[in-house]
Image (tube, rainbow, N blue to C red; front, side):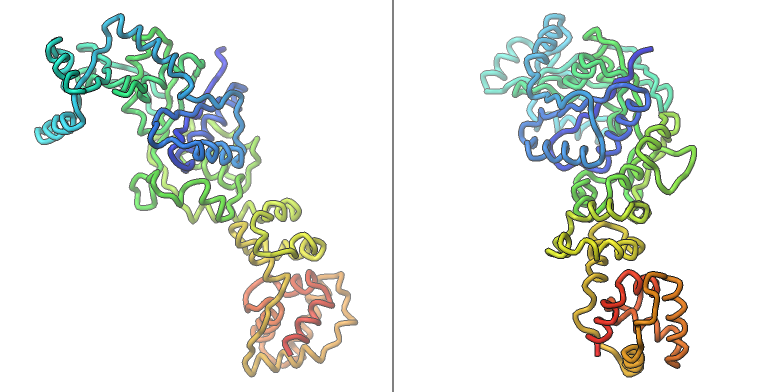
Length: 463
């Protein structure tokens, strides 16, 4: 059986987007499940927009997400000589021709076709140009791009692993550029050569690339390459069911990392964007996610990116982490804590489960943890609350077994009854004194985590 080999081929023109991350995850998971090879290729032929900064950011985000690769990263900018050799072969066989059309002429041709209700495609007029025409254009300073000539008649057919049998009439395809006027290969040309020479067996990519596939298949055939298997993933939609824009900076992995998203939560969520599970679980290990992946479980319909669901899933993963692991994950946000983060670890650890219950992201977790650890700077109480505070101030805390949460819980009930105030007022006031707000962790657990001395200190401080 042929070894499965997949790839992720980002363009370093911006930060890694949710859509690109989903593509990377699906290719990686398929290769890992099939005991195959996953490679990384940087498609940096866009000289104006490609930046080393973005390439480094993509690599860092993939590592953060837990995506590893067996080969690469390869860079298309380092392979131009290779593309030129295949281009020369097409030239020698008269399968390409120079095109001298200006961008303005091409746009006018496009608008004319749309006005006539026709699909915009290149007319092929430069194919019929005479040597005199070409000499005149070159004298004007025009540099030609090179177009691949679409065979007359016929149909391009292929089987998509998600969408089934696909076919495109050659009559609907226009001659397309494979080498730009500056000598740089286009995406369709470089991609075909790289995928073929790198032995890619399966190409899993977004639905927006479906229209590129017939052009690429024609190049595969012209260059004598075997076709890979294609699978076009469903489009990712915004909550208003429009296409999720790559220009939305707040859906880059970098923005979610900065807000305190856990990589394991995002990894799980990305698997749900167009892919279903045989077994629904709140938490998956990485190996379980890989084992659950199947191309057959990818749907055709658009997948809605529900950010609220993502953060809810993140909260579930936060609650499922061991305290020490969560403390380490939150360290990136420890500027909220200051020097206390490292110097008072023993006091912080018992408080972690309390902050863990409420937080949906790491930034929020650290903020809540800091709030519980430090307590309020000042507390403003109304008249009824002051009565509760005076009552608490007169209590003896020495007789309680502070190592037993159930004992503390029973004592709290007894104190509330003895205070003569309603339970809601008593408990909210005590919580206000301890952490500066009326809502929060269960009181008996809060008292146990803080300890006798700290509870007494905060009550006395308020008075």
